[in-house]
Amino acid sequence: MISEAAIQFGMQEALQQLGIKEINDGTSTGSKWFSNGKIIESYSPATGELIGKVKSSTKEDYETAMQAATEAFKTWRLMPAPKRGEIVRQMGEELRKHKEALGKLVSFEMGKSYQEGLGEVQEMIDICDFAVGLSRQLHGLTMHSERPGHRMYEQYHPLGIVGIISAFNFPVAVWNWNTALAWICGDVCVWKPSEKAPITAIACQEITKQVFDANGVPEGVSGLVIGGAEIGKLMAEDKRVPLVSATGSTRMGKSVGEAVGARLGKSLLELGGNNAIIITPTADLNIVLPGAVFGAVGTCGQRCTSTRRLIVHEDVYDTVKNAIAKAYGQLKIGNPLDQSNHVGPLIDKDAVEAYLNALEQAKAEGGNIIAEGGVLTGPGYESGCYVKPALVEAKNEYKIVQHETFAPIMYLMKYSGSVENAIAIQNNVPQGLSSAIMTNDLKESEAFLAATGSDCGIANVNIGTSGAEIGGAFGGEKETGGGRESGSDAWKVYMRRQTNTVNYSDQLPLAQGIKFDL
Image 1 (tube, rainbow, N blue to C red):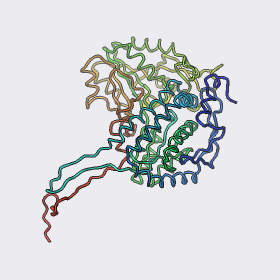
Image 2 (cartoon, one colour):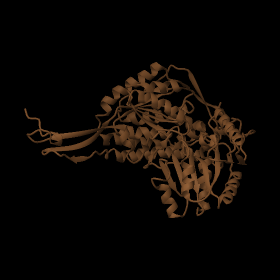
Image 3 (cartoon, rainbow, N blue to C red):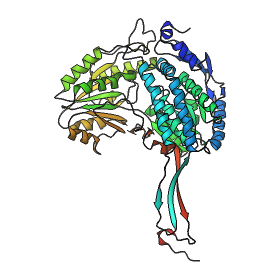
Image 4 (cartoon, rainbow, N blue to C red):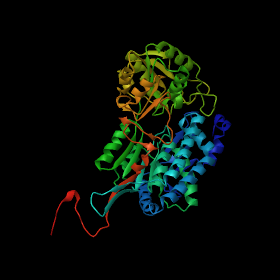
């Protein structure tokens, strides 16, 4: 029975609109739904209640989905890219119709605030818009040949089946970041979502079904296989999948990367972040506060771009520390569907345990707690997943600081001297996703953006680490995996590149002037 809290925020209507049943099949090839595996129960971290049940995919179900994808690719790749773009445009329109319902479901199943849920669906809409234009711009190059009567050019062809492994923290957007680009490139997709957020995946497939059915898209262009690590392993080892795009922990990414690499496949890895904001003496506190606080507590600290470290110059350290601590005291924690709250729950009790362990380790290593953490109990917190954002004075070399804890814990540390000293601290972690500097000094900002500056895939000036904008390539270096999604020329990873030489003369000169007379 759905709770009063869920009824109050219209969850019943949202689930109905999105085609969610009490028990849902977890395998789909588009219009067809089936599954023969064990039941996965999805509970809301917001209220603790059961949202729905999903029958997981077996090895046989996975095989059926793969066969459908293999067949679909044969015809889907023949459709002109702008026509594939038109179908993706319609996908964006359908998402606009369901934005409110899907945003609510993301919030309810994952625990991020309703505003963030709506923002995630907006990212899906934006990437569809981006992909539509891109479908007419899959350009190669024309080059001059060193041989007379010859010309050279390059072109991009569809790659085949793209396997998508996504994480719970962005349960819908990351899938669509991949599919929108893969589809316009002529690829077909098979998606293994996080088993912690399976209901949102079913909703996405239902939305896709409406669009694809209306356009006569072949069965298998959009595949869904819901299951645990065993399904991900099948996909990583499957030679029929030339590209596996995997988002999640570094540990998971290494496992996927090794399996894909062993068969010389391609992997697009979006893994952990340990993101820092450098705050210099000239920083504007009005910018620092919202950037740092939202970066640390947004999505309850469960973004790969969440702010984990605050590296503050000694001249402004106390001012910044006191301002942040005061802001933390004003945070409202509660049901993410209630827009008056700033912070929702962690995804589950395992995440709560990891959060508590991290705080204990930080204390054991010498960390000084400025904003005390802890688990919230009582009315409204029945799920046991609500925690207080914590603020800890620490040193960068602490083992726990070097590790990414997916929770609202931010470490404060002091630097002295030049900005280069702060950059050295920032770069001294295994991860390299997002970074930021708050400064009004042009030389400091340029030093941060130089080749000797931030070693991250994303480097921001006077904006926080958290979040991504469609249009820019998203991803990071080092243990973040090196993959790039979304904007810029990220589309190229979903295609195979081919160099062509055409001889339009009646001679056959060899390259480098080599003579071979017969």
